Image (tube, rainbow, N blue to C red):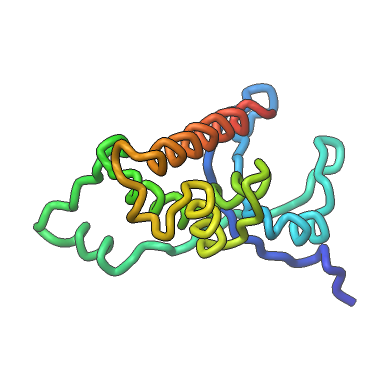
Amino acid sequence: MTNSKDKCCVMGSLVDARNVGTHKSVKLTVHVPAELAMKVFESFGWPTMAEPVAVAIARLNTETTAEIASEDSTTPARARTPWDLLTASQQAGILCADRMFWTFLSTENYGPAWNEEEAIKIVRERCHVKSRTQILPDTAAESLWRNIVSDYRTWQLAAQVVP
């Protein structure tokens, strides 16, 4: 008979790796979407140093054909635009597609955001716009957006400090 803890696969993002000299190991930090939290705890239990849970780590193949082609091509790869040079609406487009941003919105009382559509809805409501393209420079909507981003960055930094 197979126990639900025998086999489980949960997708997350590796966000940090640190040497742990006292244990001659590397500590990996994996962020899992909040909507999968119960699955993680039901499947893995609560690991401790005294009772660790054996897991396997695999890198998912998420490269797009375009990325692979650009590596093999003689055409130089497109340079990334620095965050501060993006318009507020471009930033909103990027963050609303980010699972970590969904977790932030859900855990910091902005509203439940389990997917991109819900994140978009929250951003529109909080910025008092009908479309993210209406988050224009020097407007109240942009100021509200900057506050959300500031809160998000503070939340991210606090999450990194927690052991």
